[in-house]
Image (cartoon, rainbow, N blue to C red; front, side):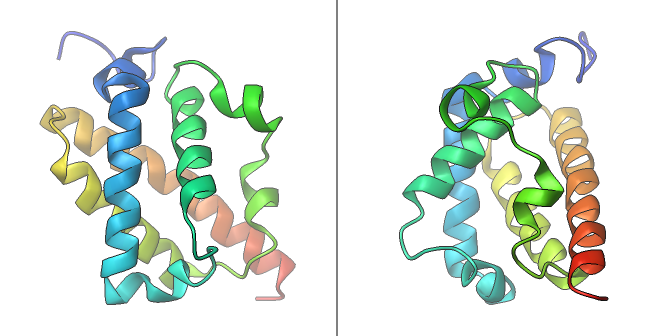
Length: 138
């Protein structure tokens, strides 16, 4: 591996920039529509995923060291507080990560970057579960 993911915009570039991230997000939400394990999480989203697609792609851009598109378009985001309006337990987090794992596998990513990205995504997923549990009395 010639670059260290997580330094500068290395992860953003490894993901294919914003176009690569939009492809990832499209595949992610396709799995969310298709996988029975994800039905409960999908039900937390509106029927149209257009806004969710844009928000997730813009968020991932800045999160991976690229342009901070989410902040430019939508303002600041606090990940746990943003998700605290919905009860997100371990099962929902695992369903979300399963969709992301399958979507990542479809991208032309280097194997080490695919592994790195999924591991990184587990961190906010666990924080959301913890924040949600505190808020929803679990």
